[in-house]
Length: 86
Image (tube, rainbow, N blue to C red):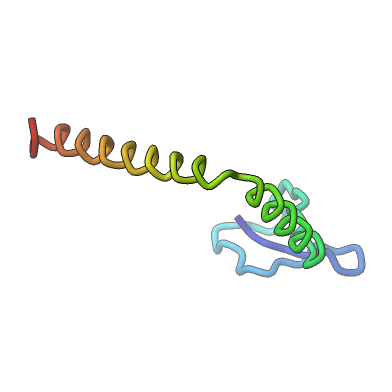
């Protein structure tokens, strides 16, 4: 993928073009996703912090325990598939 910007109505590549591209080659240009502003990121962080502050400690502990169990099961399954365990 070649990155480019538009300046004065013209598309200007930011990356080198492949050597095999010939003059007049048809290209498809798509608008890139815009990077969120600092204010948008800060608002998202506040929303996440507010949401996570409502999680009860016992629910957090249960989630941690479930994740630990799932990881252990996944490791055991991988060992079985590799013939390292029965």
